[in-house]
Every structure is written in structure tokens, then in C-alpha cells.
Image (cartoon, rainbow, N blue to C red):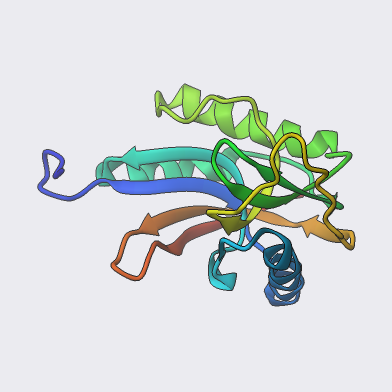
Length: 183
């Protein structure tokens, strides 16, 4: 639906975005998980770690948000994704860290505080870091044992990105609006 300026709102989120080598490793892990769960693998060019999902935002606020995010000052960190899992409620196969670093949660809290300060609504569910690799997965039932091989993958977070999700008949594509360095 158009906003007052006649422009469709931007559908946006904040994320960690993998470099090419990391994206390749994650896509390979997704291929292995697909062998166990079937479903639809995430396209390699869309693999990411969501930090905060914002959703629809008037385009008139997108520039303001982009500028405000430069004030977020957080340290870089590393996260090891070493657990492959499947959520039956939404049929998602994903990788998660068994020990997520406190720095990841601090970054998410800083981003949420910036959004609150700007009165920008966002998804307020408790943060559960995960990388979606399979959609429409055939997750095992509660009675079945679920064992998925997962070679640990280290993700060195050096920056975060503001991303716009653009819908198309071929599925959503993601456009990085701006990149923000971590210290």
C-alpha cells in the first residue's frame, strides 16, 4: 500500500551479511541439511543472520534510519555456528550457535534501543540467533530422533547491514542499503 508520498514502504531488517567464502560454507551446510530435511534450500545470495526485523518502513524514514545507525558503536566479535536444528512450527531448518557470544546480544540491544529512540516499530520477540538454510523443511516429529551433522562454522562479525527485502515472482531478493562497521 502506498504511503502519503505515493511510494511503497520499504520492507527492511538489520543483519550480519557473510562474505563470499563464508556464504559458500553456509550454502554447503545448507545442502547437507537439505539431504536430511528436504524442503526448499535458501538461495545462497540471501543467506544472512538477522539481528532485528523491522518490516515495513515509510521510505521517507529510510534515510533518517540509515544515518542514525552510524551512531551505533559496538565491538566486532566471532560466533561459531555448530548446531543444525529444525523448528516444526514454521518448518525452518537452520544453523545456530550452541554458545552465542554476549557481544551479539549487546549489538542487538543497541540496535533495538536506536529503533526505540526513533519510534520505529520492530519485531520484539526474544532474540534467537539462527541462519535459515531450509524452508518448508520436513522436520522430524517429537517421537523421532533428530541428528544433523554440522561442521562448526565461525562467523567473524566485522560489520552489520541495513537490508531491503524486494518481492518478485522469483522470490524475495535482498538489497544492502548501507553497511556499518563494528569496532
